[in-house]
Image 1 (cartoon, helix red, strand yellow):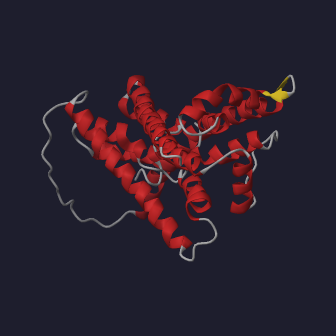
Image 2 (image 1 turned 90 degrees about the vertical axis):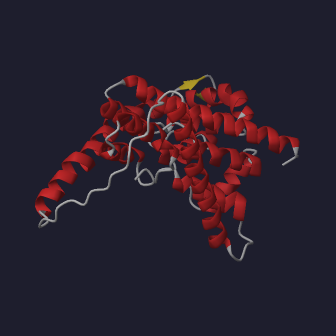
Length: 279
């Protein structure tokens, strides 16, 4: 379920009877790339991994994306094992599969319940966070300090940290400001690169490639950005859902810190290896 939306995936963990195992599932759900991460992954794969010369571009793009997804599954299983052996250790529960009694479906009741319990709930939390976040982003992009906007100044301060992780300050800031929604990573980055006062979408993949290359991007940067897109903090809606499902902010904090720390370690390690081999 997390492949569609991590927030929905967290609510889906309610079916797990064991509290310990439910917490493990909740904390590792964000390692699965949601729909908000796929557009960035697909765009960068198409631009830097495939290019326009390949006769089997679509097939190769699908295979590379599959490798990323499989990697996220492996990371999820490894982290789940580590949590079950350390912080959330305990005796594994037995698995019992029961067939429910067959009844005539109550279409109206199912639709209303799904709408109220899931769709309205998730959208409500998204709007609660997205509205103030949009205003904050507009202020950063339109308020100047000297000759540069606050957005570009902050990106400049983050440049050293971004370089260590194999990206630049703009992309690192884009990830931070995309906390309300992962879909906005590239639009925020373009807003900073192009120095516009609002979010912009790219016209085509070739135009997006030109913007990235003109700002010093290489294959190494694309690999690190894809890696961090795959493994980093969940969106704010998911974090609020974790708090609601667990009843404690500490679990929401751990759901934020755990993938972030692992993603940073992955990016720094990959950047050092690729730098050493001259990629």
